[in-house]
Amino acid sequence: MVEFPHLSKLGFGSYRVSVNSREHFQAIDQAISFGCNLIDTSPNYSNGESESLIGKVIQENSKKDLFIITKVGYIQGQDLELAKKFNGALKISENSHYSLNIDFIDHQLNKSLKRLNRNYIDCLLIHNPEHYFKAEAITKDKLYDLIAYAFRYLEDKVKEGKIRYYGISSNTLPFSASQPTTLDIVKIEDIANTISKNHHFKMIQFPFNIKEQEALFTEHSNKKTLVDWSKELGLITLANRPLNCKIPNGVLRLAPYKDIDVENNNSDDSQPFDLVFEKILDRLGKHGMKDQWTEFSILTHLKSNWNKIGNPEAVQTIFNDHFYPFLNSVYEENIPKEESLLINSLFTNAIAYSKHNTNSQAQRIESELIASGVIPSGEGSLPTKVCNHYLNQGINHVLVGMRRPQYVDEFKSLF
Image 1 (cartoon, rainbow, N blue to C red):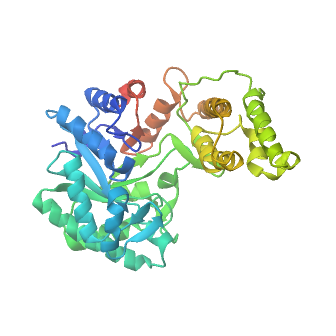
Image 2: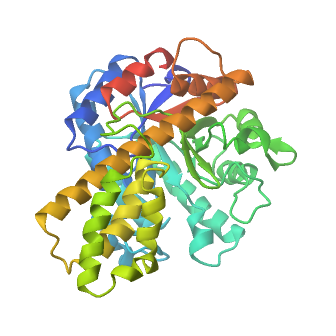
Image 3: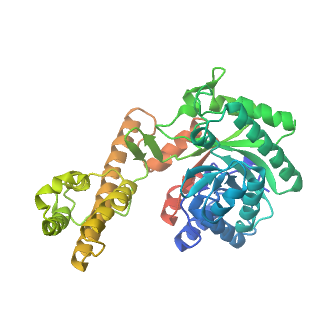
């Protein structure tokens, strides 16, 4: 069994990996061969497919000593029907509920063990308990009570040998404990100490990147930051989202895309949209609405911005949630083949331009970080430089999503 001092500094974050992808398997397998022994997953990552993939990798690397982290809390996929049976299950969305009910935690733990091909999990994290604050009126004291119940259960599972350690993964934990959705890490430690002086509450996970550095610089409680308290309490810190920073107007991606294929590299080129737009106007004309096209906000937005969208995820959201439904309405669910080909070409080009825009932004950020002395100039990619910077700032481990072997190669020196 791997102990904390021997964990690789960089961990494999498996948020968007699937058991159905050979490339994802190769990426994790290669990371292990380079010395990565820390793997983070969750049942709600790809509806359990992430855990299943890791279980497959574990089976193929049975002689390797790996530290596996998974989580509990989210109710999704096949478990949604079970949500009705668990008291206090909260509805987050149509496809997601949340619960820290002990029976649900037990159910999810056993399913995770099966998917992971293991008899035990190295560390089980309570996943984003702050959902309780969003979903219903609940006091912090009540949530602390729920966490205490969960910790007692988890200590029992340690005694049974089903888990080794446990902890909390929270997006709001780095902020001031006076905030309404932030739990106090000192209070959580006190809960663990009340249950057992030799408790196994040992890990916390939270976002940390060049824009979200609250864990290091924001007073959490009693004039100390979350990182300060973690060191004092002997907690291992895990940084997630190291290369995808949440900013007021969206997401700043620090990992440049390498697979850009824009048919025309001139960002002022409007042909892909104009070809589709011409067909749409013809179709609107048949409805007597050609001159009213400006009344459709999705058309006016794309006409001005189709090749200026910040990232591929935003392109997919705009097309899937707005443009495609509009097209299906205009074409009455019967889009001709010629138009379909043009629409697909527009989408492909919009994705490519968004990657180009993302890369340009990343290049600007890299220049700024070098000029300010945050990262060094010279050899090394921006992602490896910033991750090394996080580690040098006192974060114990950084979890990076590396879904392709080429990304694993990039981080080889940091494992």
